[in-house]
Length: 164
Image 1: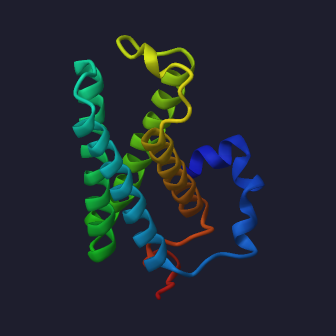
Image 2 (image 1 turned 180 degrees about the vertical axis):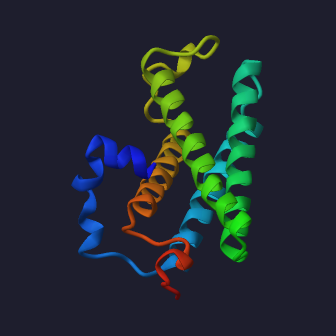
């Protein structure tokens, strides 16, 4: 991610973290855990309450819920353990959470604009509260992960030697 930020020049545009940063690694990590677990809970709620959906959509919801729970476990373990292998796993967990969140946002937007096979009633339905909540949680997690990657927030205190 850092190489992409350098290569595209976006890193310089968001380099405001050099001037100020938030020294709250525990709050950042707990926020990530709350967002991921909330996102997974919404996916599970949609999965349980909507029985008449196509099989591919059921598998998609189950996959998103599993990915968010695995990402939350990885973020928590990466925080709790100080070992290099588990710390690297924590970074991968943040990436998994962002990938699941971005996939959810993409499918939500696609289902509301173009529609999905077997779910034509979703086209134009922007007022579905669980979907909107899911998209909000996913967007907040991606924004939090972006702030951690750019250095604005710290989720791993060993990286900057910041501790709560």
